[in-house]
Length: 457
Image (tube, rainbow, N blue to C red; front, side, top):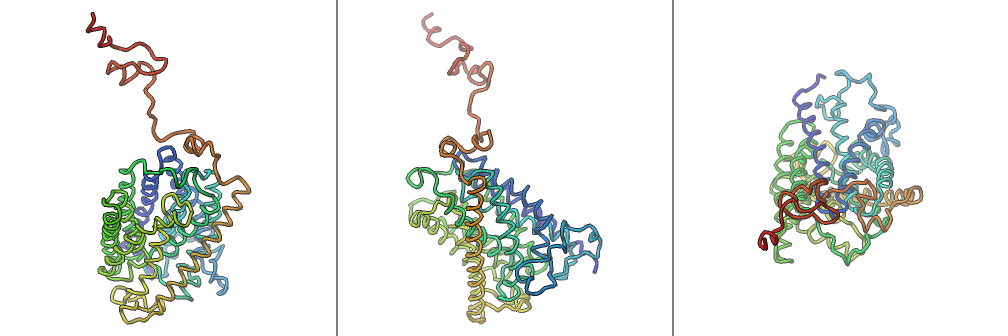
């Protein structure tokens, strides 16, 4: 088979779009955070790009997508040596990703899936803002990626038991990405503990324009995330693209309607969060359902997530930026929606994968049960692994920064820098001197004669 240049170009573009989502996430999370912790919050997302990219090339890809000769082993993990370090003797046309007969070089598929791994790890960080040591974050990210993300990606997409045996569907990452990360976030924060002052003190977003900009970049990159997951350019790609847009738009409406009824006013933070909820919900279903069901799913996800984010106050876990309330909850909604709305009219491959159409298309409840089982398995496994890794990291290097650092600001304590330098410029007082105002402190005399002396003189 020859390389299909069209499919290859589309997947390369999609890979770049998905990579852009992680800086977008950094802006989204950074804006939601307090100003004294914005850099630490953004650093956790940005560092995931560095760490996970290297680990993915060395062993992540081969364990997630390698094919094991032993069928029972392949149900749980891929072949360690098949793509170890992406062996260089597989560069020409003989090394094509042939799973869907798309003619895509395996290096391109490897790069596409690398971006998924990066953002999945980065998603977890939002739950632990303001108090997680950076060294602890890196160790946790390394352990969770190795012991949780890689196996789950294999179970869902790499020939493992969730896709091959249970026959659960996940087009672009509802279980492998969002439920996985959301459950991990819950496990991590239960071991990490609550922020000092939470929930009595106010932890309002410090930069709402950052929040909207981050959500916009996520929305833009998500077209590569979802439509790119078809791995080719066809009718299903088009439906996935349209579904991504309309479900996200509906998520915005669903969230702000709840805010309007509950609080009296819609907010930009709410609209941005609703967009993310819609994006998350449509992710597993975008290539299996029609646009009208996508709109319904988006509205439901936006509304339910707007209500779900308050559960942390009732249940007493400090999920700082609502990773559980948005990604875990909307991931579940999206996964289960396949059991209601999946149809061969959108994706004829459903039957070839051994799956069934949804309840509303005459398929009965079989697929709904499969989706529930798969989502439950990933939830329990990821939660448990995350909690165990957090306990190990806590014992080795410590998981939480000091109380003093948390109160004064984790940016300076962990990174020796701050997001906003509001001190006056050194020397002649800068803007103060130009305005004829004496700077405070041990500064020189005013650059201009005081107004009072002009009047009396």
